[in-house]
Amino acid sequence: VQKILENKTTESIGLDGFQFQLEDTTSGEKLTVKTNKDGKAIFQLVYTEEDAGKTYTYKDGFKEPFLYQFLLTMTGRLVLYTVMLYLFPLNPDFTVDSQFISMMIALTGIPGTIIGIILSKKLKRQIYLFRFSGIAQSALFFLMILTKSPTVATVSAICLGFVVFISTPSLFTLPTKLPGATPQKVAVILTIYWAAAYSLQMLVYAWVVRLVNTTGWFAAMIFTAIYSLTFLVGTFVL
Image (cartoon, rainbow, N blue to C red; front, side, top):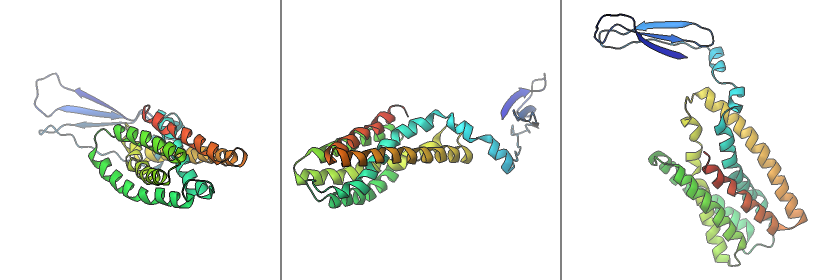
């Protein structure tokens, strides 16, 4: 929809007399309204469900750069979290009981999420939170899998669960802050995102499982740690 503002009279006037003309660039239909003595123009646009569906399509969604930036950012985190919750508990050779480590990551995600919700409402520059979370996430995971100390591994796992979730609430509000965001646009982008994210996650997770079966747990965990860095990289393109 285009809005054209023009003064339809050549005389010097007050607040009234300005004419707003809105044109539907698809159908060519026009709506014209003049301002009243208070300088206000009141008009109503009525869209049918069919009209709403045309405002932002899946074709438009695939053209949205944010979709690919968001996918790059989140893929490493999704793979890391999936591996730690569903594959890592089967690791028989870790420094600490692997099931205990996975449980600690899951449990500390709860306070991390609560703090993340609070920060999402207070922080004006959320990108710094994302980058901190990305650096801490990968650093703690590397430390956890490389240390021989049970205490260090346990503390790293506890902190890892917290930093993974502290930025998640803010991240998933980003689509609603896109220019021209509407329920239709956000729904389309997130639908494509989740379909692509889970497909990519499935492929990478399968590769991690293959590494476990062919080269061992250590190589698989190192690969997961390196792949988790896509989150940090993504925060510089969001």
